[in-house]
Image (cartoon, rainbow, N blue to C red; front, side, top):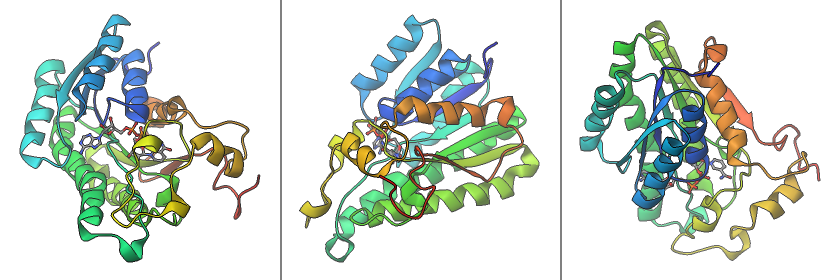
Length: 264
Ligand code: NAD
C-alpha cells in the first residue's frame, strides 16, 4: 500500500540531491509531484525517471525568491493534479565566509534563497492546503540550524530561522489541519558540497571538504548520510503515520548532534 497515495506535493529544489530523493520517494509512494528548480536539465531528468517508473511528476522552472511566479506554481499543481497536500521547501545554498569579512551582498543572497524562499513556499501553499482540508509542510533546515557552524554563520542563521518558522507556522495553522515541521540533515553526500561558494573574502581553513571525510571525523554511525536517508524522514512526516506531529524537529544526522562533542 503506497504511503502517500493520491496526495499532491510540491518539492522546491527538486532537481538534485535531497530534493530529488524526496520527489522520487513521494512519487514512488503514490503522490503526484510538481518539481521546481532553476536547473532545467536536471529537473526534467528527475521527471523522466519518475515517469518511466510509472509515477506522476511535472517540472517547472522557478527561482524560489520570485514571488510573482509563486501563485502560478501552486495553481499548476491544483490544475494538473486537483489539490495540494504537501510542500517540501527544500531549495537552498550554502555560502562560506568568515562573518567579519562577509559582504552584505553574500549575506543577502544567502538569506534570500534559504529564508525568503522558504517563507514564500509556506505563504503560497497555505491557501491551497486550506482548500484541500489540510496539509503537511516540511522545511529543510540543517544541523547548522541547531548549533553554530563556524565559516557558515550566514547559512546557520537561515537554518535556525527555518527551525522557528516551522514552529510558528505549526501554531498559526494547526486549526486548519496544516502541519509544519523542520528536518535537520547532518552531513549528506549531495552535490551541494562541490557547489558551496566561498564568500568574497574566502576562508581556506573552513574550505569545504569531502563529506566522507567529515562523516568519518564527526558522525557516530559508520557511514556518510545519503539523500535517501532524508527523503525517508520527509516521507514519514507526510504520511498519515505522522499526522499528529507538528512544530517539531526531525534530526537525521547519524548521531552527530547526540553528544556534546564529536565522538570519533
Ligand atoms: P543540492 O545542491 O544537491 O540541491 C539543491 C537544489 O536547490 C539544486 O537543484 C539547486 O539548483 C536548487 N536551487 C538553488 N537555488 C535555488 C533557487 N534560488 N530557486 C530554486 N531552486 C534553487 O543540495 P542538497 O544537499 O540536496 O540541499 C538541499 C537542502 O538540504 C538545502 O536546503 C540544504 O541547505 C539542506 N542541507 C543539506 C545538507 C547536506 O549535507 N547535503 C545538510 C543539511 C542541510
